[in-house]
Image (cartoon, rainbow, N blue to C red; front, top):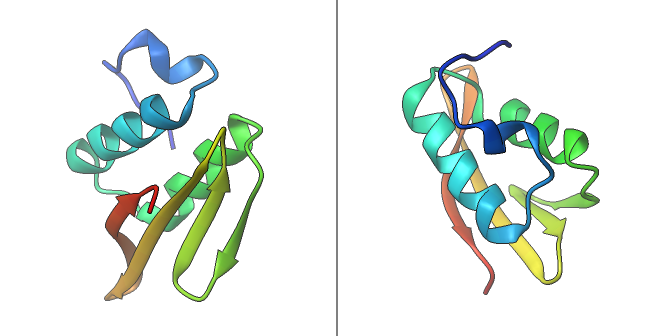
Amino acid sequence: MAVGNVPQEVFQPANISEFANLTVQCIQQYPVDHRIFTESLLQWNRTKYYWDGDTLIAHFSQNLYISFEQSGDYYRITGINTK
């Protein structure tokens, strides 16, 4: 997917708060599968992660927990937190 008119920060490595903010901004503006978008952004950012059920756990300086639910054919984020 290509996006336009996004902040330059989209193309720079992101820390945990930047990643969470950027993810929320993008999924609110573009009709994307949140799971595919999030995994792609983590891979681009070279951030390791794993799945625990419907929760993706990304390893930044502290863990970021992103919960998903299926909505039709797509997945959407239901929560982002550091617990």
